[in-house]
Length: 465
Ligand SMILES: Cc1cc2nc3c(=O)[nH]c(=O)nc-3n(C[C@H](O)[C@H](O)[C@H](O)COP(=O)(O)OP(=O)(O)OC[C@H]3O[C@@H](n4cnc5c(N)ncnc54)[C@H](O)[C@@H]3O)c2cc1C
Image 1 (tube, protein in one colour):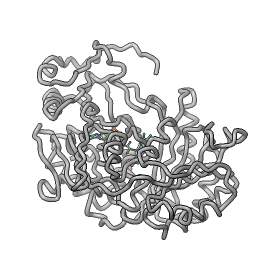
Image 2 (cartoon, helix red, strand yellow; image 1 turned 45 degrees about the horizontal axis):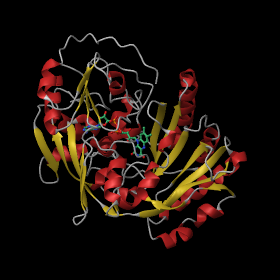
Image 3 (spheres, rainbow, N blue to C red; image 1 turned 120 degrees about the vertical axis):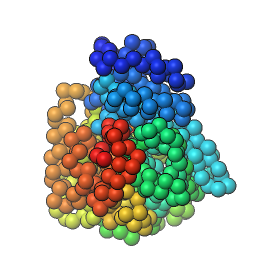
């Protein structure tokens, strides 16, 4: 990203007292490293906070929360910095960057992990894989564990193990009054309920405790098809996924073929349909389970095979480097009728960039075994979570890329639920918050009133107290 001349934001707040109270760095506009510290993953958000606090300890987080509250500053909380609406930065306020706190302690006997609030999925998967263990996480290794889990946590393992948040045992939180509390099924139960889906609305999560499961080597990867076979693939998938064994967790997509070695060179740059398959069951059963993906249509390129789970988690990282511009839209769906498939084929065929795609994640199986009011995540009856994502480098393409996403999303609206996944919302989706939370919205407001009545934590998909 080009270096941008920075002027000191005109909030008039002196960050000196904050520097004295913390061990982590406080990076203000005049400090070296400010331009790296202020940016987030999505290059569309070029903001200039008053300062970025790189928290090293819970004590730093407490100091940062108190400082932001007492000075009336906007406060962004950042873990992996992947928020598509750029919530991890702001103009003139404070950012608490949790990324220095990325430690993971695995208890292999109890099959649990304690993960600090700034860790990424790469950090957690690396640590737990040493013991042949994993938990549902996202499909990219650089996404933050905290941000992803607090909104839900959709990934390859969710049909078998539930969402990431379904595996949360407890969380340590610094609340708006600067107090440190633990939330679990046994203490601060209302906060624990709200954290599991309510995003960053209730405080700064300094650590998360997860249940882990036996997941080591999986059989996974992308299988590419001619675009003419996209309809057959989607029809097959919509039936297959209803009853597929729960260790299957893949999804269909559209993509321009990247120049990968397993794709024939003469197909690089072609628009293709694909299925990212994932089988976490016994490896000798993979061939049988994945047979429908081999039978449905001629295969252009097959990149699937056995690989360690963390390798799969990092496989697509290069498509989404830090600073890439991004815009997305998302909705849940219960069914995939013929007309919805036709709309997918029409708009998916126009996918404009290698880093643009549509993913249709399955969220049935274990995700449905948790009740719709048991956690704040409201859509336990949806079978699919669709995300239409454009990511691109050239700022002159902004309008065109955004339009492709909007047109695609619009075409699917008749077949979608009113709400979508909170973690796939864009900055123009604030109007959907009540729909996203449905029956759980009122209780979330109650929890917000208890833990953050002044709405200090408002740089997020905000639940107003
Ligand atoms: C390339 C890419 C791939 C993705 N893949 C998936 C996927 O496979 N599955 C999926 O479910 N989602 C996925 N997402 C969406 C992702 O879940 C959200 O963007 C999520 O908010 C990112 O979390 P983060 O910590 O990286 O982001 P950040 O921008 O750091 O945080 C996002 C928000 O989460 C809250 N937050 C973060 N850390 C804390 C904390 N320690 N305490 C309190 N609140 C906190 C804050 O409100 C913050 O604004 C993906 C996003 C991207 C950009």
